[in-house]
Length: 130
Image 1 (cartoon, rainbow, N blue to C red):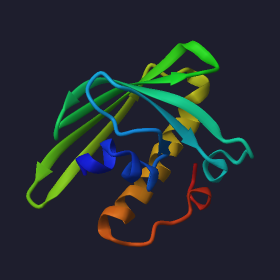
Image 2 (spheres, rainbow, N blue to C red):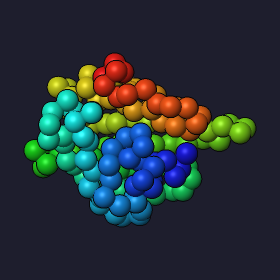
Image 3 (cartoon, rainbow, N blue to C red):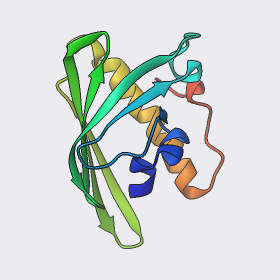
Image 4 (cartoon, rainbow, N blue to C red):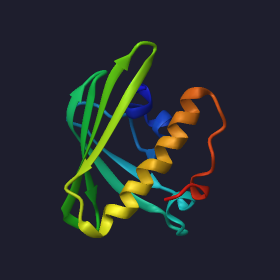
């Protein structure tokens, strides 16, 4: 699961296209394509890694290029449970106007992640409640 959260190619399979792997104190560009945003141009942003504790915790400031003061914070926490891993995701410092889209987005993206980890074909993102 850690690799799915930190390696660019694997992140692209369930979340967004990343310019490079995530790592300690690294800032990495990411791009959501039209299949996610519903717009021809998609959406570009940056993840700045603020916490790096492999394979237990990854924290990132999610920088909004349209609002330099509007960075939210994403925390991924992983807890081994036998042969499985419990993944917790919290996204804080959100603007009230972003709450519904962000919550629905995580639900949709984690459905794709779960399918990828199980070796199943993931549902198309735009068909999921977003």
